[in-house]
Length: 93
Image (cartoon, rainbow, N blue to C red; front, side, top):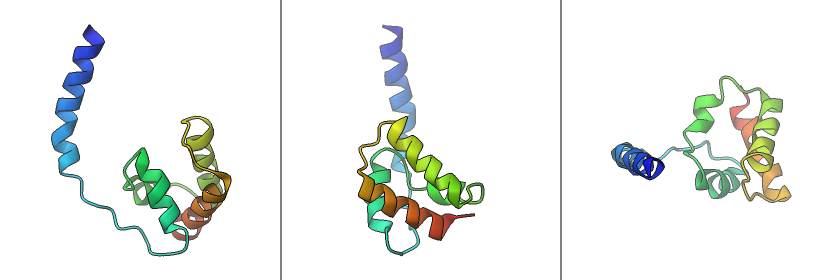
């Protein structure tokens, strides 16, 4: 019961913040569509430019791999390649 109450309270607190989210304009380049179609299904695209100063190109491979293998993101191999190529080329720190 406590978990249910906590979940409801968390949703109520987060709802106004989510309503204020501004769309994130990613750099227009090949692969952007794959990023938008796959990544924002689970989280805000704001994480990409926010983390780019800290992630070198090889780190994006690890991040996308983690999203697929650990977090369970349903991204096929072709899209994963497009996503990592896009992130490394445009947000590779």
